[in-house]
Image 1 (cartoon, helix red, strand yellow):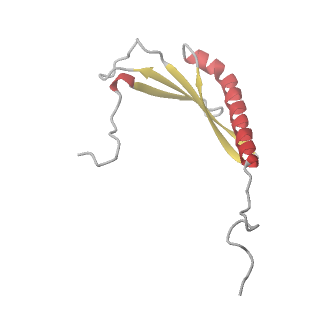
Image 2 (image 1 turned 180 degrees about the vertical axis):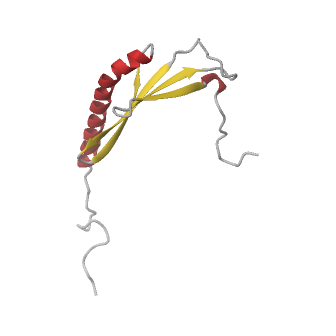
Image 3 (image 1 turned 30 degrees about the vertical axis):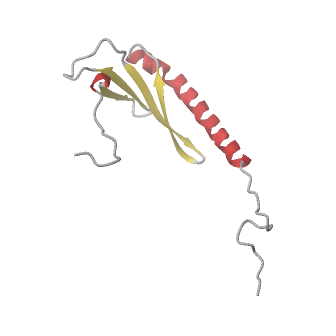
Amino acid sequence: MQEQGLPEIKFDVQGLYREEVFTDRRAGTLRRMTPVSVDGSVDASRPVLYAGQTQLLTPGGVLPLGFEIEAKDLAEAIEKFPAAVKIALEEAIEEAREMRREAASRIVVPDAAGGLGGGGKIQL
């Protein structure tokens, strides 16, 4: 029985992947996602996907980075890992700059009474 207004959640049997995690316990992790059919056998009609994850220590704390890597096999994904980290970091820095610009561009407009709301003058 589905409750009113709640979405029905179910697996997409056409989009199943088996996930394997590889790590050097230093630089980060690589995930290899192999497409599979509903019986668990490899689905050769879809590509194997690779994704990387790492954490960088910044003055503001730990910055987690996640990124996709286009590669034909694990060896190529490992080779491309450093460049993918660099691109993900550049994108994170640009996103932070954009958020800073948006925050700086917000203008607080006082109301017609000359205050930010509530008046501000005591009347007896």
